[in-house]
Image 1 (cartoon, rainbow, N blue to C red):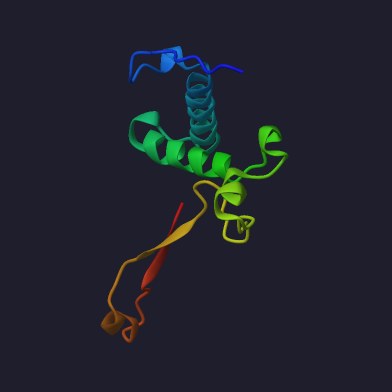
Image 2: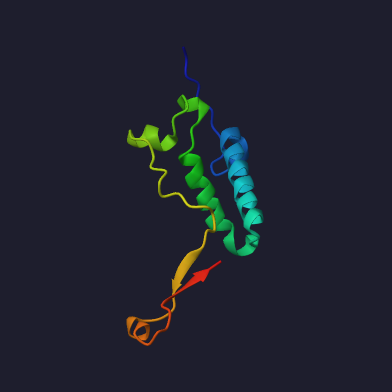
Length: 111
């Protein structure tokens, strides 16, 4: 068996079909997450892209015998207990502790 060297231009994902397919998959997943919650791409595309990348690395793949890339890399299965729905409600701290004694709320729910 021989190994052949094949030179490509660096930083050109079009010459690497696997990388190009993964980039397209991540972008499609990010767009779906943004359209599902009604956010604009201009402000939240990077966060959605990071979330899509996180999910891909913790999802089973057939090429890895249905193990996750995280499991293959670290040797232990990923923890799914801390997963949240993309853009689930979160709490914003709106005051300081002294205001709580005056009956004002310290937290407000953000949509």
